[in-house]
Image (cartoon, rainbow, N blue to C red; front, side, top):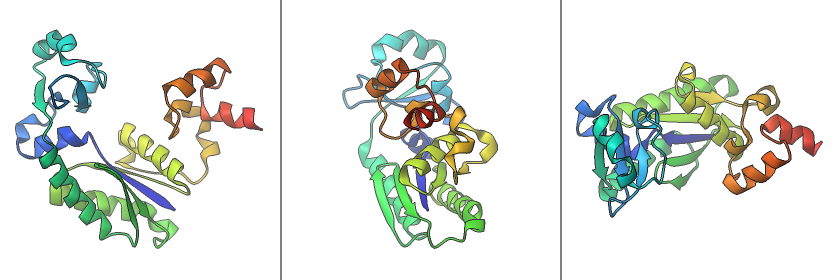
Length: 206
C-alpha cells in the first residue's frame, strides 16, 4: 500500500506559521515577478481565484476582500519542506519525494487495520512539529493514493485521511480529471466521448 502525504495549501500555510493572524484569512502567493497566482488558501479559492491568473486582473477582488498577497519565498518554503520530509521519513522504510509538498510513503509495514491510526499519527506529528497541515491518501497504487488524498483534502468529514481499497464503490462520484495524469486536453477528449467519471471510463474500457 502507498500513502501520499500532501501539505495543504503549502505556500500559504508556510506564511501562516510566522503570522497566526493570517489563519482563516484569504491568502495568495505570486510568482517570482509578482505576476501570477501560484498558491491560494482555501479562503482565496472560495473567492473563485484561479491558479495562474495574473494578479492585475484580480486587483479589485484583492482589495474588496482584503486578501493578503505574498511574493514567493522559496528559501523559506524549501526549509520547511525539508523538515516535513525528514519527519515523514521517520514513519516509513521508504519515502519518495514527489514535489516540494508531496511524498509517497511505503505503508506495507503497517497492518491494514491500523492504516487510519498511523496516518492520523503522522498528520498530528507534522502539524505539531512544523505547523503545516497535511492530508494523507492511502491506496494500493500511487494513482489511487493520490486520488484518496484528493478526497481526504476536499471532505472535512474524513479528518484529513482517506483510504481507497476498491475504486469501484466510489467510481461514480469521481470526475475523470481527478485521476493523476489526466490534464485539461485529455479530459476534454474524454468528455467528448461521454466519459465524465471514473465509472464511465471503467465501463467504456470493459
